[in-house]
Length: 388
Image (cartoon, rainbow, N blue to C red):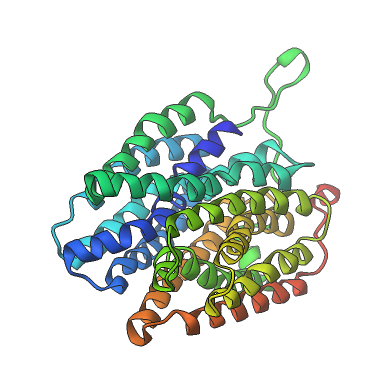
């Protein structure tokens, strides 16, 4: 649990995503780029994610999640070194983001959720919420700390510091604490692993639920992925002082959203939880568009940012089982990630074209509402324990 929490905090989906808003303006001014060029890095990161997610899922199922995670953490450090070494070429910038996704795929929720799902059954939702709340810690702590680092030493040093955190904190923690559960017989005697039950990857693809979850979360992810990385420039454009502190407030609610979603998932039907968790951030997007209550709006957006990974991981485990969880979740997460990158870039394009984020925010509100309601069509959970 501790290794997963630290790993998510200092992993692929947390550090680049929640700090890009702080890096965006200094990099744009230094390189002479528009905001859309800086934000386009996330799009290429998500393209890389989509290209390797299936392979990563297969490797996790085949070689074990621990091996994949440790190698990927070492490679992620190299990715941040690439970001710190930019020369002003937009092609190099985008290629670096692509490589950071390919190299760091094993530090994503794809690996950590697999480990948590293996260890926990009855309290799986709450355990996922605790472990994946690491992204909320990043969203809370990283923006102001990185902002101070950038102001004092420049944005390149900021990326070097992030890479050092992965190397000297995340990697040793995973090495010492991240192990998969080994079944034991009487008196601790080793026994053969129990078979995993559920759908094969092919069976999941042939069912409507796989595609419904994928499509629903693509829209939700576009909305969340557009609003969170652009939150700091969005607030600054609206005249809000100390925008990085508001981003930290968002981070607190990412943690709250993770844990709250996990708690509710263990007690209520997951699609209904999704509708409830997405209604408030949809309202927040409207508040941001109207320049009303930026603190409340940032907090509510954080709830959606906190719930999404919990929901996808939980839905995959409940509706598809654990037999091919790695591959099934990999493709769901890849679609989610691609849509998040497109959302970040899309919001920036809207701003470059209109000088305002309002149109993108109204669209985000609609996507979150529609995506949550669509999940109601998933129906009852399959009873894998009974089938086994």
